[in-house]
Amino acid sequence: MHGIILRTTRIKDSDLVVNWLTDDDRMVATYAGHVQGSQRFPNALELMTIYEIEYTQKPGQTMGSLKSAYSIERFDRIIEDMNSLSCASAALEAVSNLCPDESTVIDLFSTLLQSFAVMNTAPELSVMILAWFECFVCYQLGVMPNLEICSQCAQPLIKSAYYQQELGFICKKCAHDESNIPEFVLEAIRRLRFQSLRETVQKALVINDEAQRRKVLAPVLKFLVSIMCDNSTMKRLKAHRFMAEAALEMPKLFEL
Image (spheres, rainbow, N blue to C red):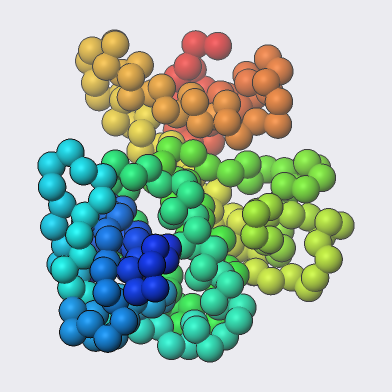
């Protein structure tokens, strides 16, 4: 099994609790004893490194015992570049803070490694890759950030060349630094969002059972509500109509 470290917590001088994202897209907590100088951990346990790991976990326990971890690949250029390291660390934080421990998030491991590979070879693209990855994580969890307004002043956002950690996409007025992403990134993420909506609703259309159809559509409606600036009836109606017309070109899909 392969894994990448999300974070480590020191328990004793040479004992650690290590949280992993594994290649089966799960988050695993393990206890690693006597790490320093151990033949079981010849490369130590470092961030920004892919490991081949072996661990055991007894039924009913929330933490496993790490038996061995051997380094396969290290993202050296990320570690050497402060901007890339900051963005890569933010990506790991997004996984740790947003993804549920007990669930599998499809393609999370491979997408994280692909993102790190780009940051490692092209550090100047790190902020753009972080923006895309954070939106990908939210997309896989069924939630997307509001891409229609500035995250700081809440004014309408048509285009944006600015992205800030912990805020998201912001307008030129609120940005204090030079632009850090191409403007097409915001539009690309918007397209990703509506592609998801389109696929979900098309799946629902072929279901004959009304209750099952509503079950499939429920996440779509929940998502539409989550991206609104407020919960006014007008905005809710507009959002439903926009989704029906833009994503499916079927204005009467929903009964408003």
